[in-house]
Image (cartoon, rainbow, N blue to C red; front, side):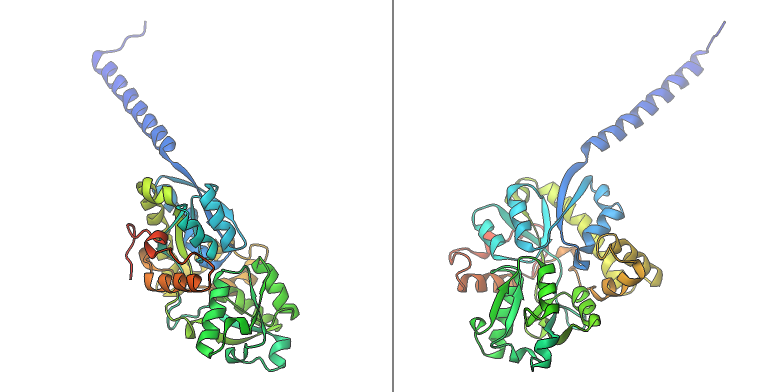
Length: 344
């Protein structure tokens, strides 16, 4: 007959209760994970989100992340306003500002920024235009310039070049082509004369010989806050813990990215691992050895702890207002929520 002493029975019960508690805790943690959708582009500049996902930083913050990819900034802004996307990292656009005025969107942090000494966005000319004399930005007057949409960051950059060179933006023919891929095709074929884009795309194009470098955006917009982190106003104002957790994971991913490819303080192995990680999302249709140089060339600074250059954001906002692309009454406070990150 089976028998058990009181001591053995108590130990068995205690062990079972301990196991049950552990299982319950794991179940609670799994249920507690908040599912969010993060908007991104297949750009090296979006690497912090990819790093945070691949290395488990989002999971550490109790976030179950799904990516939704876009080909331009404005559609991402619309997706966040509609609730299809929770957090996005992209350039400030007219669409984003207009949605902020409607109470739908808030900028909550900074991402990519132009920095002296680090290759940033490059001003390009088609080979045909270059051979015909378009060899520097001061000669852009009378030439066509590719943009995705009116009111995009490309539109803003075209204005800043014209302003510094002493002519009007209207002296150039701005050609809206909706998607980055379409602008690339138009530039390579000579359908547009010029464009400006982040280095991982620009340097790859330069190697092909169909385009030529004629300048750097950093010479026209010092400390330009190229991309920002943004979310719905509801997330920014009512789901603050969720937003803080997203920013914490994103910032940890940015630290790894900067150390590996921007500051290059993490060592060669860390750089190789970082390139391989990013390759899952950027130039994934190419072999790693072919994609690696372009990924490395695209390594621009992502602000530590998602700090936001509000001086640059205000300059962009003022330009949109001056061009009549957004309402003249919108304020910086309407666009930006400064509760989450350091501003400067």
